[in-house]
Amino acid sequence: MGLCWRSKGGTVATYEYRCDQDGLFDISRRLGTAPESAACPICGGDARRVFSVSMVRSGSRPGWVAAMDRADKSRFEPDVVTSLPPLSAANRMPALQMTPALRRLPRP
Image (tube, rainbow, N blue to C red; front, side, top):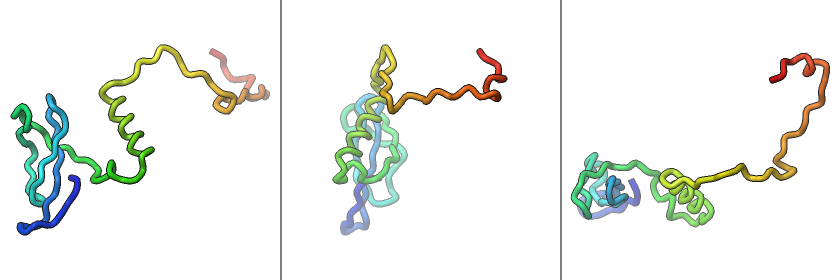
């Protein structure tokens, strides 16, 4: 559920639906009257209601919105990698000192 506002008939809310073929769309209904599924306005197919955090993307935090957009994109179109990224000195694991207790552990 997204944005809510008052009208003559009561409080109206914007509900989000996802069509498997055409993607997301919004429908405005009175609060609490949204059906579990709705007809897609483009193809007329059945679209399921999506529960999302309301008004998160409309904030004044562009870094947060960009991170959510990257996460959504990687869910459906993940980047293909061919190698691991190089490790910087700060990201390397420190070598452990060989103590007598560590010397007794089995080695692979």
